[in-house]
Length: 420
Length: 88
Image (tube, rainbow over all chains, first blue to last red; front, top):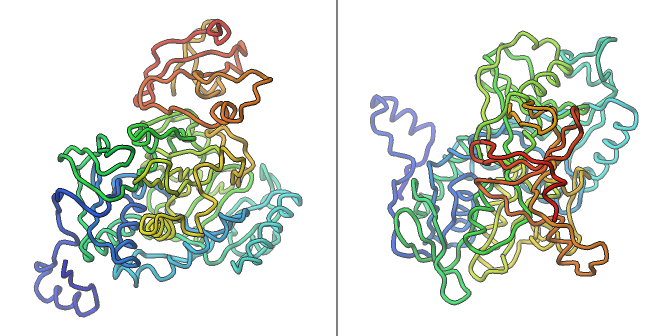
């Protein structure tokens, strides 16, 4: 609380005093006996939810419970891509709202999340694929979202390092560009939301694992944790990757499987990739970090997994796709690769809603697309917790859509979670 | 790489296989009119962190469908058998 603002003058002042007087960014809170609301999961979505509960709804008696440390889960493991080039009603408007929140996020949080709107290019490799991109671009524009269709020459002018040779395995025919898409510093997002929520009085409690739920009749009135029992008016789950584990403890049956997705970073290079580039002929996407490393990813490992590490077979597949698109990086060395555990839903869309259990609210099922949604997810989940009713922007993300046949199958991939 | 002991072909890398998902799910009868039964069959999964019975098909080998019991936390494989023998 009473956090000093970060500003030019605070940098000068602390610089002149040898950088010894910076306050810690948020308190190391210990749990109180009860809160109005408990958010389980101190990742991006949980912290954003707590921030918007305080900022938008004036609900400050809130705790965020994190079983490990803030930023240790998927918010620190993703490839940081932010975009709103979605096709289906329900997705399109939600992700565009998120991009708009990203555009003002550093100011809203008083924390530089390094949002860089460098643009995202998805390559097309046939006339038919470019037609489907035209369809997507039209839907985006009808929703007020920027989208451009590029022909081969225009793509070549923007990203000349891709394979435009006669021997390209899948020759580039064109591309779709969203200029406002980009990347952000993912750790800063977690830290910024944590600091801003804490400054509103939210308790962020790390190393506090939820082991069960406290019930009064049919209603959930608190949680059992590794730091004891904590009472709550309402409990919100934001534990994507492990939603099934906590859901089962609450008695929820869920259409979710946990799968591991890998990400990669190369040794630092001079500036090469100015955009986010995604390969339309396979699953591969790449951007370049401010340190110079190429950050990229590809497909899921493809079988249920709670291990936060991946398999070498996928390393080879992703590397093959990378070289097919960008032969110039064939001799670049891989610096690190890591895995994160994803909640995969049968339609690749998230679930944010009240649950059939009184007092319990769910935010999960983010598949491999949760990072870009962080601000909108927190905003809408906070609204849902505060009012007990879904925010209009997440009306399509309800849990019972699978039962009623209203799935949001963006990829048209069918119900097998591992094929999404 | 996971290594799966195929009952036909012996120990093989998992990229010779196609994953088929949770093997504990039972398909409703084709004339079952209950939408809830079909919803659970198509969508609901236990998704355990621990032992998981799952289908794999040896697509570049004998093409048999197998049931593998694997721990989803560390990928240790406890058993492999033919899928057809597990049906009652």
